Length: 204
Image (cartoon, rainbow, N blue to C red; front, side, top):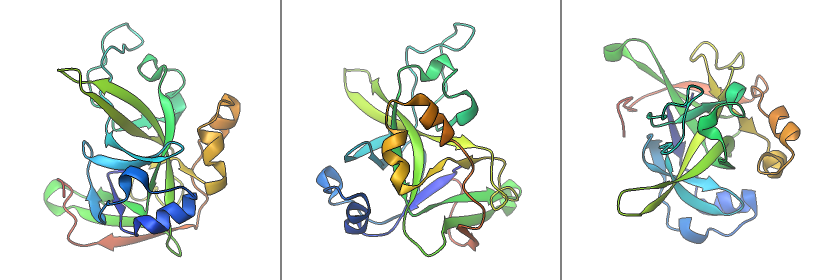
C-alpha cells in the first residue's frame, strides 16, 4: 500500500542513480523497516528528509469539515479532486522496496517486495509542510497509491504508484495531464515478492 519501506543500499548508490549529491542525507544508515510517522528520505530535486504522514492542518473535506487524520497514502484517483490535497507539492520516495502483510493479527505473514535484479523503486509522493505548536515547520510526505498489478493483487488491494527513473522530472513538473498519465499500476513481472521473516507489522 505500502505498509512499510526499506532502504538498505548505500546512500552512494542512491546519489549515483539520481545523479545528485547526498547533502543532508549523507549519514543515513541502512533501514530495514521504516514506519509511518518516521522520517524518510525524499527526492524533490534534491535529497532531503521528511516525516512520512501528512497532518492536513487547515484543510477541509468536500463538506467543508476539517480533515483530522494523519494521511500516510493518497489515492491517485482523487488526488486532484480532494480539497485536502490542494496546493501540495510532488516528490519521490526512493527505496529498495516495501513490505505488506496478510493474515490475521496474530498470524500475519510479511511479504518483501523489491525490484527484480535489485536497485531502487521510486514511489510517487505528495508533500506539504505542517507548522507544529511553537512554530516549528515539519516537512511531510505521503505516498500516492493506485490499483494493484497482478503481482501485488494477491497480497493487497492497493499499491504505490511507481515511477521510471526517466519520469521523475515529469512527475514533479507542471504538466498535469502528463502527471496524471503516470499514475498507473507498475508493469507485471518486474517485482520480486518473497516471504519475509523478522519484520514486525506493528513497527520496527
